[in-house]
Length: 276
Image (spheres, rainbow, N blue to C red):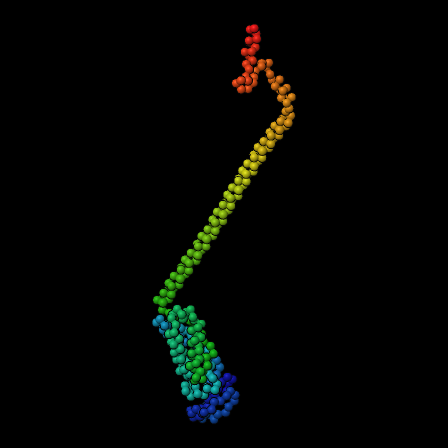
């Protein structure tokens, strides 16, 4: 028997109860013959259809890698002969595809393709392993849908893209407005600070000028008071008499004395003396 194969002995067309392992075996010519069952991994590719949860037609191309379990090869041959692929694997794959597709909407089959593929592989392996066939790999090569559904999906995708674009543009506009607002606030704050500083500087300048003017007035007043004080210190009775004498015009006062009884009219007295 070739490497990786199991032999089934037929005697006069009857299946013997013992499977032959790989290696050399003898048979009776014209009476017995050996059928070789390959236990190595094989690949099956098939196309099939199903309906999704939302009743959309799903056309799928699937790739199934499988192998016959050595210990059950004899039973497989007794049940289906060498046509186990067409009689067991293909029908089971169709059934699993229909079962899993019915659990997802068409959109979900696209967006959750890996998940649905894993579920199909697990279900197919569970179904076939009972009869001696192991699934080593399973892939969805392609999913196809009706033209109407594809058009609807494309329209939805366009709408989603436009919605995202509008949202992005709106967010950009809001961000720009916020930036402009912050710039305006900063400019207003800077202008207010400039005005405040200018006002403080003007007030300080006015205060300094007023203080300087007050100081100047005080200094002038102090100087005048000092001058008068010095003049006052220099004034004596003699100085006053000399000043009066320097400024006398040679005329006596008309009257002297105080009160009505004590007033003397010097002019009349001088005139009277001259008449006598």
